[in-house]
Length: 257
Length: 108
Image (cartoon, rainbow over all chains, first blue to last red):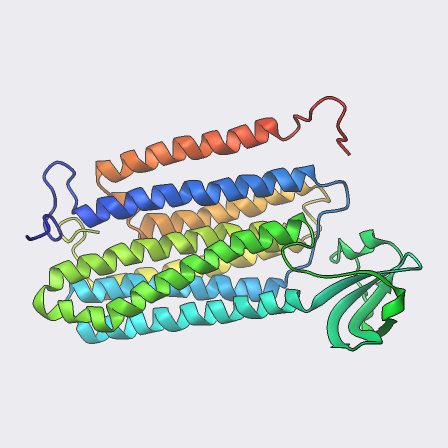
């Protein structure tokens, strides 16, 4: 049985079925991310004065990822336009660019996650706090590249501290009260940061897999049914643009405010 | 993005994309500048408002031109209308509830 309205528009809706489907799906996605953004707002305004982190994320990485996603959104649109005018070689080129840009985005995101994973805050017996990246750990001591602060509040607003001196910090295990990395369990900021960006990264990964399929084995359809294939590219493109839209708000909310 | 409504000219799209990319670069730079600028005062609310306003311009470009939302069918607008309604409701309830602490709890 042939699936109806994969190419021609349905008379009552005015668009083909897959497009109705993707827009309904995107509407549900808006509510999914909206719920998490609302959780962010509540956590943020509910945080005690001076306890919400500033400057914990590297704006340079966020900016590069913003540019990468903007470029990938553009190459996705150009891939669809190339399909429309039946220039298959250009379609292949533009979608290959999209895949490479997406993989670079995920690579940078993974680096940022790794950076947080090896970043530790250690509460010491004398009431001070050691903070920095783990360099070495054995059965006697922990070595960080970081600093020691008297008050935990000094670790929150890094932007306000213009001259942070970092160096090698050696700590005896016997002096440690608590040692925790900057994973999702560290505080509410890292929890919502990993949740929001992790969900977004999963969307990037899923979108990349779909685009890779359409670029590779799925592109056989272009020879037999080019118009239907073009519609598939359009639908995957709409999803990709949505993922870009989410990042447009994630970047300022998490990195800049 | 159906062909009847959008006669496709690849060169036109490339020019359009180049302009959009330049604008996105400018708006991203403006957001970063607003984030680090001392001229916006020390208040969090004003700074966030400016940064998010610039982000909305970015989002409009992506949704309007790259997703062709400026010239879509009525059904798509209807779906998005409901989405916007519920999204505003979600955020509205969040803002309404954010200072609503039960009596006797610590409100910092």
